Image (cartoon, rainbow, N blue to C red; front, side, top):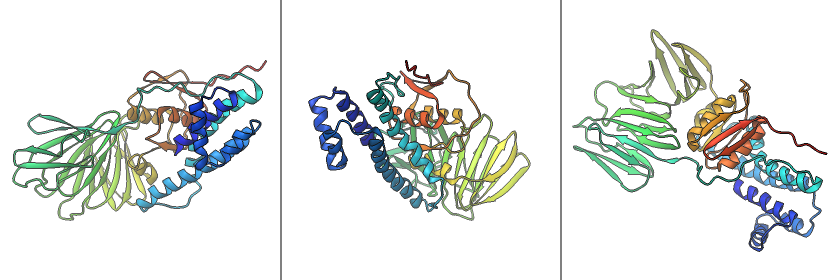
Length: 390
């Protein structure tokens, strides 16, 4: 729905400046079905910018509030907190920025540099894609929905709704497989025991086609969310660098994409044991661990951080500029160029990962106060230039 508000703002700018085409005017008039107030705007060119901003922001906030609450409710994590408003504020900045640019120009006659670069159609959000490497070295690209089964020896893996499924693989053969998700992608796999793993962009997991013996062991790099199938007789262990996360039946997120050498594990359900070197800690729901230089620190968990990317959102709360930009760059498969000193300041907010790069730039500008533009396949970050009013 955010795209509707962005489009209305764009069409209103052209209408008020007298540059709207006949086709665009018809498009704007058609929006009246969902937004009756547009008729008033069309009949009165002297309408004030504040009124337009207020109405569009109200519509937008309601839509995003419902979507985000629905997301949290599905995960049984919805709790009424003041923090939810941060998402609404950050997302509504898209409308405020778009309207603000043309309103300043129209009502004051002052030229102002655009806050967001022109649309670059080559920069698209990430998609469901991965590369499966079989034990014989054969690689298979996944995500194009061009095949429904994969066979290796007596093992048959199914592909349904962009999920690689090992639930029916034969227990007579064990093969070691690796699933790699590139920059600009995400993918899901159901392991032989029923455990489901979501992989974020630039991540991989290595695992057996069938779990045998007294444990279930996998290894990951990057970021992954686990919903572990319960089996008390076979502990589920995830190797992450030099550390291990152990669970019996639980849900948790592991991220190695943060600061170099840091591993963050956020528990959303059950209990896990995190180990590195000779140290081990057992944590319960609502907690997280940070591993730095082989030292484990237990902190309070922000479960929304663990769930957001899996549910299709960027989540900025408590992250610094570089962390945010690295996440955006991995998803849109772009580079980042800093022409501004990078501070350690922590930001708040979020936006859907399906949004255009232009919308993401607009939200990030509002959150950080910086000038963020897309130039070809590079995000350029610099201080805002002040307009000179003569």
